[in-house]
Length: 91
Image (tube, rainbow, N blue to C red):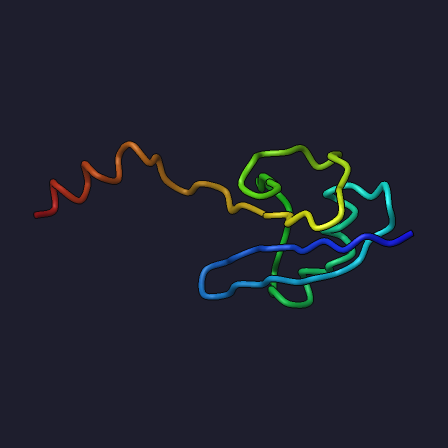
């Protein structure tokens, strides 16, 4: 039996939100692989990424429920604690 889920992912300048159906018992990783994001986002890779369902961090092996929104988070490229300091120092 298939269940409906959605996949949300954003890259610099590109956002993708796909609705798809996966088999019951599918995991976060199964849904991401089925979404084939490399087709929509050139150079897309899962390396260094985190995953969530409705804003809550989950592991790739987490089973999905009908209606789940799988979110793929980008890796942090800078230390969030230093960003405000840099902005203040630049003024």
